[in-house]
Structure formats: structure tokens, C-alpha cells
Amino acid sequence: QKEVEQNSGPLSVPEGAIASLNCTYSDRGSQSFFWYRQYSGKSPELIMSIYSNGDKEDGRFTAQLNKASQYVSLLIRDSQPSDSATYLCAGSPFGGNQFYFGTGTSLTVIP
Amino acid sequence: DTGVSQNPRHKITKRGQNVTFRCDPISEHNRLYWYRQTLGQGPEFLTYFQNEAQLEKSRLLSDRFSAERPKGSFSTLEIQRTEQGDSAMYLCASSTWTRNTDTQYFGPGTRLTVL
Image (cartoon, rainbow over all chains, first blue to last red; front, side, top):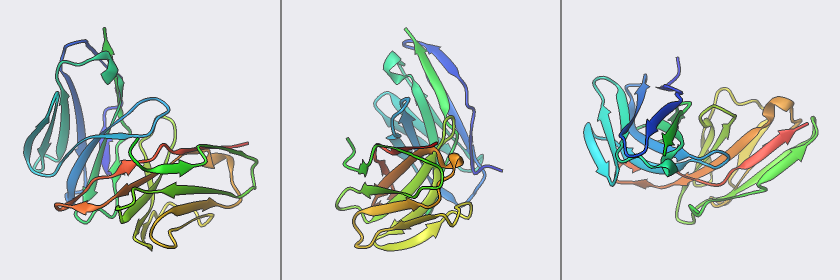
């Protein structure tokens, strides 16, 4: 069983819509969670981190964590074509010795 | 640019040759990670250093792979007797433990092609 699972997509949304990306994890010891964006041929770049239950907002991005249900989500409001990329979810146990990445969800924002 | 650099950016080699990659982390970061990523997959953890100590190594990692971080600054990843299955993007990330969490910043990666 993979530590972190994501729906690989592809997910398509029209420009200006809300994109919703989901991730589940199996290790209850995971404490910190991260969303990375990866453009084709590039390395992952950090969007947000979250380690407390609830919502965390940063600009157009909102991360949600529910430890009881073991899921993490990322909402992108007012989606732009430049948001088209693969979004990676990652989890880490306390201490951060290992990070487990999902396979990523491909998002396309249609102008 | 995250401040993490990797060299070379691309490497083409023949099967059976040895290759070595270098990662220079953000200077104040004491943690360094190596990952491997193939097409359509997320980064796969290979190994982790805290300062010069290698504290974690993936159980799936072949003994052909070795990594060092001799002075707690830059790190090298060596693959001996390369195989075609080693073709991938090799990513380095650095971080520091801050406010009970550890946020990683990735370098641009080294793309390895084994012929």
C-alpha cells in the first residue's frame, strides 16, 4: 500500500473556476503535509505546508487537513492557465526523516 | 531559483559505467535529501542526511547507489554499474527544522539517461 495516494487525473477546469485536488495517506504517524507544483520537465516547487487540522489559506490556495479521515486537499480559487501543472502531495512523520510523495494529479486550466 | 543547485543537469552514459552527481544545498540548511523521479511518478525517497550523517536510506535502494556528505555541506550521489532502469531524474532537496516542521526546497535535478 502506498503511503500517499492521489488521483492521477487528468483534472480539467475552466479558467476562473475552483480546482479541488485530493490526497489520502495511510501512515497515522504522518504529521506534516505539503503540496508541490511541478511543471513538465521542472523540479517540484513548494506551494503550501500544513500540519494542523483545518484550513490554511495563502492567496488563491487553501490547504485542508483532516487527520481523523487521513486526507489532505488543496483548493485553487480563480484558476489560471498558468496553474496548469502536476500537483504533488507529500507527507512526513514528525522529525521529517522521510517524505512520501503521491504520484501527482495533472491539472489543466482551460482558457 | 530555490538556492539549491545540482550538477550536471543532464548526464548520458552507457550501461555499466559509473556516474556521480553533486548537490549544493541552501547554505544554512542542515538537512539534505536525494530522490529519484520517473515519468508519471512522484519523487521516490532515496536517502537523507542531517549534517554529515546519513540517517535514512530507502530499503529499496540498490547497493550500487551510495551517497556522501563529507563536510555537511554539498553531497554526492554515485551510481555504480549503471543499468537502463536507472534512467530517471535525480532530485536533491534541502531543508532545516523550523517550528516543528521541515520544508524542503528542491534543486533543478539531474536527468540521467542510460543507453
